[in-house]
Length: 104
DNA sequence: CACGTGACCCTAT
DNA sequence: TATAGGGCCACGT
Image (cartoon, rainbow, N blue to C red; front, side):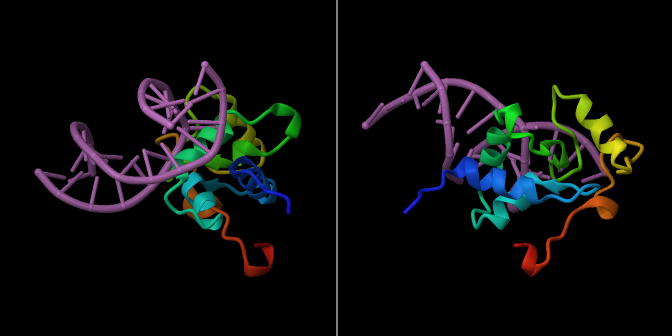
């Protein structure tokens, strides 16, 4: 059987994030059945090759903060109509993605 | 095979 | 409400 790497599992989930929505690193880890691996999800995304054309800008941390060293992430999200709060974080209450069973 | 790194997150203080 | 500390584990060297 084909062995999927951890990275590929992460890529699969990132590809599912709908336009105009965001998910947290912890959510991805949880969906993968590895709720303690949020940090590894972040590691993978920070090394994601651009040719995969994944919407990795739709992933933020649990506070809604965008990735350090990647200021463009904010404008990419705003271009999708995602609202930001005064402190510069994403309004998670409004934009978080909660996948339904058939989406999983 | 051992070790360092890190786009995270929870708990206790 | 804020900050500090530690667990977590994929990946490259």
